[in-house]
Image (tube, rainbow, N blue to C red; front, side):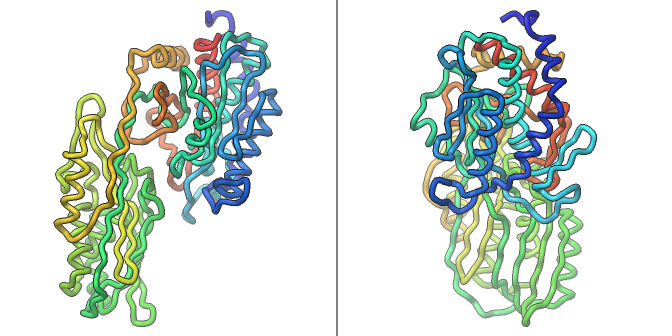
Length: 473
């Protein structure tokens, strides 16, 4: 479709509806849609189901034809269009929150100028509303489409995307799909993922000083912001000396206390997305492991095993050099790896790591290499292979069309990118990630004080509308 037929009125419509767009994002952010215990008719708990219902109400308010897929996801179509050609995938669930937000509480959205703070503002409720407004603009302006477009909003992206597994067990994949769940200009390569558990059963040695318990992290795809450990037999001056050394090297905040003849150490870092562990986060877990190696603990199997884990995942080694898996290639970049969950309770050690691997990675040079390194230190890595990389050719009609929409509104050429994060389209044959993050703006995704630039959301709505018209008009 010729842009001269619609661009001016489309841009004006979106600008005129900025306040409503902002209010609708805020309404969704107020819902705590972290995954919860499943209930009847609520596969991911009450919060995600409430978010699905709220999005369905918005879709229907703006004239879309909706279908709720048993609260796994909600889909909305523009009535009167032809056979569906394009799907847009967004998600309404969010990652867990900490108590360390400084701007506002996670589910109390705060607008300051062009910024909105709150969990889900950028990942992915804000972009979901931008996609909805793209469809609303086309409908209310009466711009005809030859082919249909559907917005699908799921509720389990952060915990495995079983929502899409359910949806695509009923519906077929569209000819083209994009998800506003990552970056502009466009992502056509998503690295392979190796997410595994490492375990060991350890005797409860009674030699002192000893380590008794560790708890750190909650999800394998989130860099842990806190880590706690319980010891017996340490002296305060020993803890202080090690803590000062580690804090200086890691930027972690380390405190300690004595409870019932036990020394309890707390490490506070900075959470972040495990696909980008080198993007400003401070891994409290690997800082704790460094601290443990500095303490004068008894030479027991437990101590040796935990120090072995510290050898495999030293603080600041984001690319797997210590494991010998620091792979990279020109097209898809460097491997990243992050140890994100660790529990030591009653002699059982369990640790989860998350690795995002370039196209050159294989089971031999990555999976089996990590397995071997764990085995050398008395630990066992669970079985299973990598999740394969996702790749759509830069020469495909979808990629070229979407980059054209990006270039039209950003005024500069766009080049497809490779990322470590898995987006909503990872399992789809012809899907790419398209928006809404922009270079140079830190939205604190998966971290404290998550924030979105509302100017970017408005521009994104225009870009998505343009893309719909170019692909479906």
